[in-house]
Amino acid sequence: MLKTRVIGTVLVKNNIAVQSIGFNQYLPIGIPEIAINYLDRWGVDEIIVLHLDGRENKLPPTVEQVKSYAAQCQVPLTVGGGITDVSHIKQIIRSGADKVVINSSLIIHPEIIPEGKELFGQQSIVVSIDAKRQNNNTFIAYTHSGRTSTNLTAHSLAKRAVELGAGEIFINSIDQDGSKKGFDLELIRSVVKDIDVPIIACGGAGHPKDIQMAMHCGAAAVAIGNMFHFTEHSVTTVKQYLKSLSEPIRLDSSFQYQDFSFDIHGRPAKLNDNVLDSLRFQYIKEEEI
Image (cartoon, rainbow, N blue to C red; front, side, top):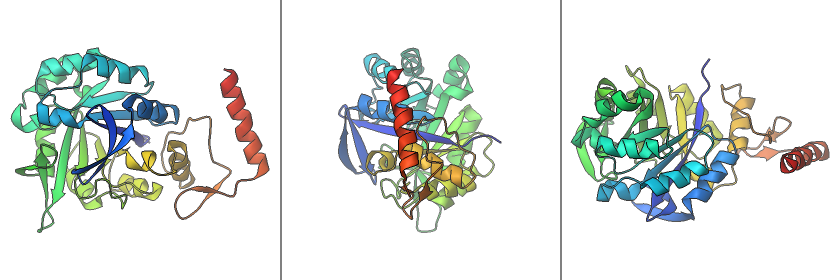
């Protein structure tokens, strides 16, 4: 069985890593490279960096920025924001990223998807779709940071992206963004249907249980930002919680919580001296290396 990927997301605005709430409120986290380094060291499977300014000024991250991100990242790195031309894809991947994220260009410059696939392979092209629930419970895709409606459903746009050559679909709920109330499961189900490439679910994670529910709706990966940056949940804690529920999760961190139980918030509980000594020993061994 394929393992579900836990992806850490870093949103960048004005060269600062930020928390996004509802696509219209942004709170500073700090230096992007520090956030990337933290996620990488604590066991995420991949990292996605999205430049929010790029969507407005139509400029992708610079070579220097991507190189700086890649230097902090041992896991696969995906970078997006402002990609409007195949030359941007070349620039980002040749600077150290493994994949790129295409958003508004799916509508405006769709030709860059097959062109990018031809140059770097289907696996390198991730298409991001930002969706908002309508009064009739359909999900309409929006561009330009959730301000412009495409008048197309998220599912129909996902199918179009796959036909053009997208290797993965990154589906983000505008309504749930930053809420920590859980993923929009109906949105995930609506997009997964008839789509034969992996779906990455994003928007709303606040508890490890939310990840399990998204997995059971068909998500091949979950992308998480605020839960890792703004709560006491570490990547390792979240993964061990899911492991305790027998979910297919990669868990290769030196620090693990297999001897712990978890409280209602998904945090480790029942710490004892033997476990603490074991963790100290593992930490000392890592520092010696």
